[in-house]
Length: 155
Image 1 (cartoon, rainbow, N blue to C red):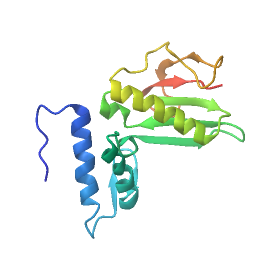
Image 2 (cartoon, one colour):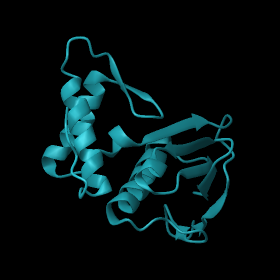
Image 3 (cartoon, rainbow, N blue to C red):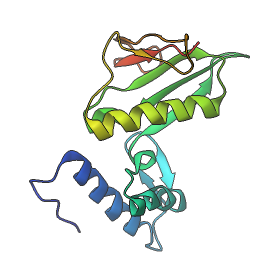
Image 4 (cartoon, helix red, strand yellow):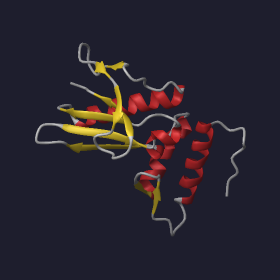
């Protein structure tokens, strides 16, 4: 059992939660951790928590970065868990970018917004490469019914 001080910031509380859950992963009967949007195996969860030793935020333990094929040549992606960290969820509209590029882009944007507390704004332009940016739109999600997300166009 761990006590999180009332004066702890949201990020400090999230890191304490990850530390406790990672410690519980060592229990012989532990099978996985449910982070609210996906289930992570104990070994994977502990690996994700290791980044805290270097002072980094264990974002992969707190936010799910989902990528799927939209059709034969396009991928879509979204986050789940940003809202728990008081930020808007992100959604990548169909793109020809590779999944690794999409994940790195989403992780970079999510990490920046969570660490700085400066969320992505409706109308803000995010670019993957020069001359490719289009304004971000805060609209009803195409992927998650009933939720508004910041939709990003990469190409």
